[in-house]
Length: 216
Image 1: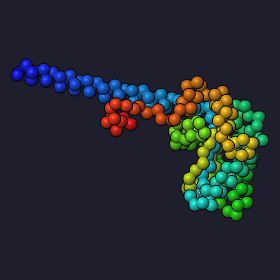
Image 2: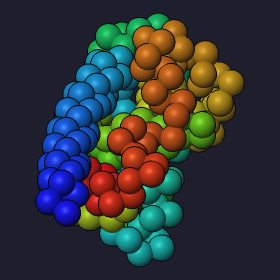
Image 3: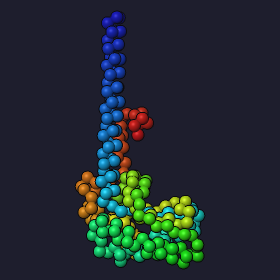
């Protein structure tokens, strides 16, 4: 009987050590994965320019106005960006045309009968994870052309100005084939592969669901 108890104690001790090692391995994997995700996001952010339109409010009229402003800015920038072959050229073109962009956006607001002021800035902006067509961009800091209508408290609209995956001509439309070619040229193979995925890079334990609550 004593021998059985001794064996049981050893097994419990071994299981405890195994469980602790499992937790340690899971924690190390999570740290590695978080570091990889951040590295990929930062790499992507260095190669793209986002486009962000913030509506005055969430009422139907303000949300519709947001899309009118989006299209007005897209139409205005179409000619200016047609010869921009790099991120630096795109960024510089946007910077040089901030006043014109603001004018186009303000004109769209007034054409719809509103008196909201419009603020336009090129700046670092925190974005949530966002999907455009087949491509998912991870959450993080990106440089963006921000167009803020009125108070800017409504639901926002996001896209990517460079490489252009937002507009076909002056019309908003994500075209996966053209987008894929542009993104493939701009990003590394690892970054391009990442944006093609669902965007969920977190560790998942298929057979140990209870660990998901700890590390998910």
